[in-house]
Image (cartoon, rainbow over all chains, first blue to last red; front, top):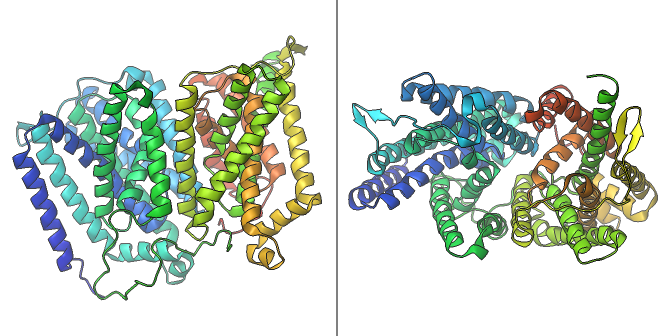
Length: 340
Length: 292
């Protein structure tokens, strides 16, 4: 067994990434750009987990905005109502969200294909309904204000710059851990699973358990990102956590490419910027209102049709057999239509 | 809750359930032929309703305004298959499902650009007051909804059993390679499955709109509940879809009577319970076996 989780290309990638984080943080002082960078980081954290689920376990979730929201609301409620330490609230939110994901994943992941997609779509809608309806806890549509900021060693992370220096290192660590996971026994199991479920099961992979594990992990990651969001914005209301965000997150993974840890990161960057550009144009040109919704769907369809491997195609692993002859995306293990 | 009140909830539930059954039948058509859960099914319903609203605004006779959207959305369904699904027929089923999600977002966004974010009404098919029934009231449109669902259900059953095309579609679902060897054009059959799903969705949209109004964003919830009805009845099974739809409608209506804010949560709870206890649905296995 080649324990080479730390291939040279990986170390190089992480070093370059860290360098990019430093360069941006040291040279950019615009609050707007730093704020955008923070938003990208938050989306990237969620997309990273979702990418593991989509790329490696071959499943889709339409409820990740809900998990993101659960983290945000858990932090908001636990810190404002119960005066808990924000870091403790973050952990409790992550545990609670993980348990919910586990409970929903357990029945739906036994089945193949699309049941998790519909199950998580429903779960996301319910979470959103609860945010709106359970006003005694969530303050309903008007939301929860005055959420305390995070502090680190006595330093309050109360502006874009300070938060930038917290959140991007967190993303770096998350990317590192995701890379480790992919190169671990679990990662190999997931990879086998993504390529041929039957063969993976025959080789002794506990398919349902591996899927459930990665689904729960991705929900926990989303919840953590949501907690960071709550402490960064210091205000939560239900509107950002709806179905639209779940679609955006899925699109980020597809656009970036789901078979490397870098893909979701790139996707989060590209789509968060695109979203801002379209939102600003919609403010200037009224006729464009609503166009951003179409844009997301169109981007998703176009990428799936014409560049299903995403912007960041995986590098061939050293020592792995060349797969050049293989067409990029199709995985023919679940034959549909069998036509042509 | 007793007597007339209970009866009223039951009537509301059965009406709503008939709509879910129609949506579920649309899911089943596409699923049986291609193995895909078509997330744009709810958008077909939405388009049907909004097109009917527009045609009525153009002073078309009501019958034409209700029937024409069926043809239009059939064309939309066929186009969705031909341009988005067919090129990827060899892809992973999850990719295909994601494509239908993308298509649903595009249709929803386009509807928002065309019709705006407002709710639009449609006149009832037949004018007249509600009918009293044991202390409860029935709106004439409810009778239309239930009647249309019954006719559509029978028509679908006859289509699959008695017509060459219907039988060819069943053949594609059971074994598409064998079907092709027998001279069936699988691609074309799949396209027709999408077209019929569009048509039945549009029909659901136009009978539903006089009861509930419609807007660009009604598709998501309808799709979720229609899917839930399909799973409850046993996905791929059209009798099951009707049964599942009616049960879901009644459960939801009674539930809403007790916890009004959480009406939409019931569908999801039912879905999870079914997946936990009886993933094959109430009426046993569907056409495909690759689900478990």
